[in-house]
Image (cartoon, rainbow, N blue to C red):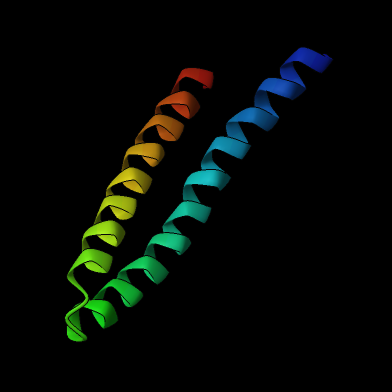
Length: 70
């Protein structure tokens, strides 16, 4: 395997790793979003909902990049 192939393999693994890592952040965002919701912090809930949506979108792009590398 030449260096370019190793780089492509590493990038593919990184895309998957980053998506998995984002999922762990999403779990925390959801936990704290629910706490904020229980406390009536509507603007915080809205912002966390937006952050969660962006993480989901980011993961879609990362997983598409991963597929393109396979």
